[in-house]
Amino acid sequence: MAGLAAGHRVVGRGEVYQVPPRKKGQAETDSHRHLHRRWLFDEALSHADLSELIRLGGVIKPTQLTEEFTMASLRDHYGDKANLLLVVTEAGRLPVITRDQQVAPKPGDTLISLVTAPQPTDDRA
Picture (cartoon, one colour):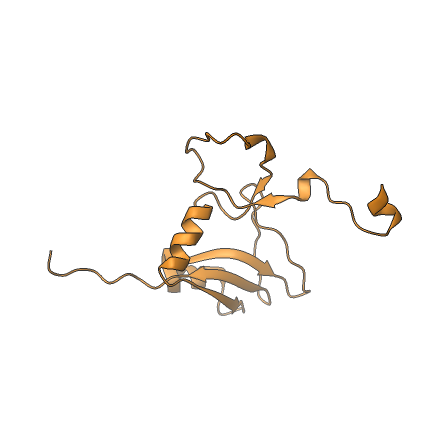
């Protein structure tokens, strides 16, 4: 109530987000499972995955969609090397991407992705 009186917005459980510590389906043995909130990003991207992609040289890349360069174009260009993190709408809104709430980017929106380069292969094998 003090937050309301001071003019601060109080956020409920439905608006608290967390990067999953492990992939969906992996055993959860931690004692603080009850603290988990809504999982960010898609189910294939855990905290460990994000850390590894950054360690491998991943970079955060903004890409503005147009009528000619669509979400499908981004997937065609990067394949599985682009992990969508955020969408900034043309109106400046930032809808949250969660495991249970995906977004449908449109021309004019800017995608914020974690992009990794293909890893060199060892031809000596």
